[in-house]
Length: 65
Image 1: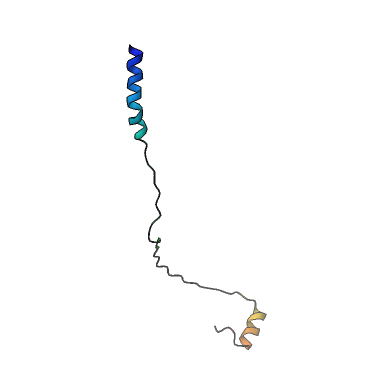
Image 2 (image 1 turned 60 degrees about the horizontal axis):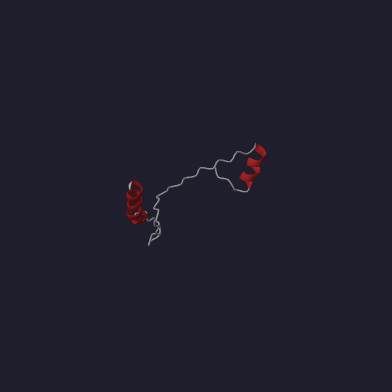
């Protein structure tokens, strides 16, 4: 009798347990991802030259000191 009760309970609870399966869904966003970045870049370039090169560049007015 106990076996019959367990079997009947299993038969009735099986559809309930199988019906509770979690649903996982991935959706892409309808709009693209926008990243606003306000970036200010400053550069300082230093060139070191020897005396001979400085003279040549000064003659051609390439570098202004």
